[in-house]
Length: 246
Image (cartoon, rainbow, N blue to C red; front, side):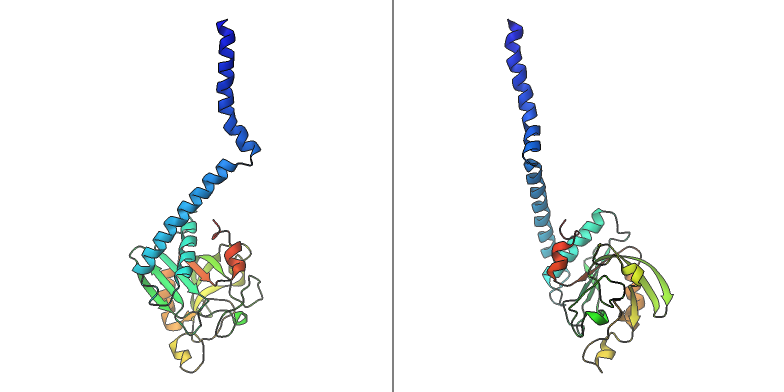
């Protein structure tokens, strides 16, 4: 008699234990998805707070970098950092290609001491546009700039003097950069001297070229495993970037 009374109780316990599992399998994993969405929302809230704080500390509005561009840059920087792809997380560099090439649109930031190390000119690709970059490509012969996140590598001396290799981290957007020979290098067609005689800075074959007289300092700051972000607010990139959608 006692054994018959225990059986319903045992079955109730097993049903209670199995229901959450069955609900996950039959319901498409809704509880897990909800948890993931909540975690992502929490990350975004924390990121937004950090962006606001750092944007003011770096005084980026004063030197022309939009808060939106910085938000994307910081999000990708944390992604690379979380995946252990940065040997030197103390430096974050941002090329804001939404600005005129007449502007100082390269920002090299000291993430440890919260200071701007460099704010200067940077060129875009010849086929990307004239004064403003409008078009971007990952194709080898395009002579266009490539958007997205890069990790800097080693230096070498080439036809443009000291140069810095960069590795594109986003498939379909910039992962061919290394094979294309896209590097950071100095050039006489970038900077205030060139602008005295021209309406806008000269253009490269896709490289983020910087003023020749500043190039060695810039490359020394950026080399060996720092984060570089080339930004332009095109929806094709912002929506499809796996780093920004994380």
